[in-house]
Image (cartoon, rainbow, N blue to C red; front, side, top):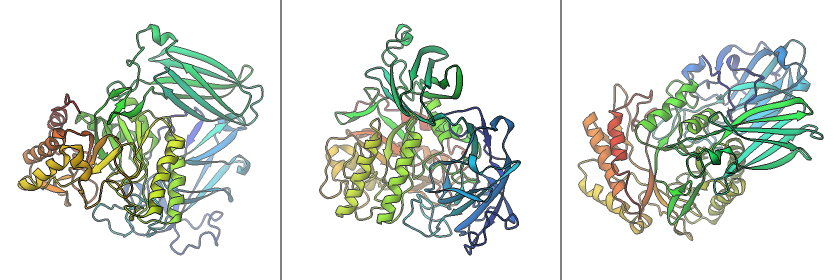
Length: 597
C-alpha cells in the first residue's frame, strides 16, 4: 500500500506519474556510498522499502527505529508516452533532512530541509527506455541544531519526544510541462474590496502568450478574464462583488470561507499561444480575512472564538506520514465532531493534502514548523530557509490563519534576557509578515514572547480533580488579563525582558493533557483518570476554568490523539474515541454564546 492521490492540490495538472511504491534501499552507516558511487551501482541495494514511509515505520516494510544517518534509495521508471517531448519535472513532497538526487548516474540537485517540497527539471538527464533515480539522504540523528521538532536525538523515544523520521516521507512524482508553463500562482483575497488578487509566474518564453482565467462558485461561472503577458511575472485583481455573485445574493459574508461555511471558488488557468493551450492548471481559493482588533481575533470582520486542539500529526504504523488520504479527512471530521473549529499543527509542517481537506471541510489551522532544540547561527539560517519555503508552498490555503515560528523558547532557550535570541524571534516575526500580510504571527507560543499578534500562553497547572487548591489557583490565573499576564505557569514570564503586552488577544494555547489509559497502552498525561466517566468530568472541570475567564479569546487543548508514550489524547493513537464524543462537544459548546469583554 502506498499514497496515490495527487500531491499538490493547489496547482493540479493532468499529466503526472506517481513514483511511490517499492524502491530499492540501503543503509550506509559507514558513509561510503558517495565514494563507491552507489548512484551508479545496482548491486549495493539489499533491501526494499515502500515509499513514502520512512524506514523507522512498519508500513515501510523495514521497521527499524535505530540510528542510520545515511540512507540510499533507488528505483527505475519509464516516461509515459503522453509525457514524451515535454519537460519532465521530478518532485519530492518532503525528504528529511538533506537530499542528493541522481538521475541516470548524474547529480541533478540537492536540498536541505526536512519538511517542504522541492523539484528538479530532469529533462536533460533522461535516456531512452528505463530511467534510474537515486536519492542519498543524510539525517544527523544527534544534531540538535537542525529543525527536528518532536524527533528525539536519543534512540528510544521518551517524555514528549518521539521516534525519528529519516528520508522520503511524502510523495515522489513526476509531471510533464511545456517549456513555457505556469511556474507559480498566488491568491490573495481581500473581502473588504471583494477582490481576489492573482499573481502569476511563467517559465520560458512568455512573449505573445496570454493567460485565461475562469472562476466559478458552486459550478456557476463568476468571472472570465484574459491577460496578455508582457513579462514573466503578472498580477491581476478581479472584483467578485461586481460579478454575478452580487446579483445572486452572496454579497456580504455568505460566500466567505469559514469553518461554518467553507465556501471555495474553483479556478482554471490556461496559458495559451494563439488558440494553442501550452499549460492548464486547476485550483481553488477562499475569500477569508483574519485580523485582530480591540483585543480580539476577527474572522471575516467578526469576533471569532477559536476552539482549537493540539494536533501532532503522527500515526502508529507510519509516524509523520498518513497511511491514506482519508486519514487526514478522518482526523478533521472527528475533531469537528467534538466541537473544535481548528487545530494547531504542533512542530510539524503538515502534508498539503491535510491542508486541502481543512480547506474543503472548514477547519482553521495554525501552521507551525519543527524547531531545533539548540541555538546557533546555523540553526537560525536553517529555520529561516524553511519558513520561506513553507510560506511559498502553503500561502494559498485559506484554512491557515496563524503562523507559529517558535514554540516554548525551543531553539532560543535564553530568550528571556538574551538580546541575540530576542532579535531572532523578532526577525522571524517580521520576516513572515514581510512574506505574508494575510495572517497572524505568534513570536514564541507559550511564554517569553517578543513582538506578537497573539499573546499565546501555556498552562498545565490545573492539577488532579482532588487538588482543589491547585485548581483554584489555575482558575485565578486565567480569570483576568492582569492575572494572565503576570502568571508564570512554567516558571517563565509571559514576555521576554524588554517586551510587554500591547493589547493583542490573549489565548490559552496549551493546557489539559488529561491522561486516560485505554486498552494495553502505557504512558503518561499531565493529570490522569481511570475511567470514561471521570475523563468526561475532568475535561469539563478544566474547560469551566477556561470559559469562566473574562479575558481569554480562545484556546488550544492538548491534545487530539495519544502519541507513542503520551496517553493524553482525546483519541487513542489509532483514532478510537476515549469517550462519547457528543459529551466533548457538549462541553465545548456549553458556553458558545459567551461574550468576551
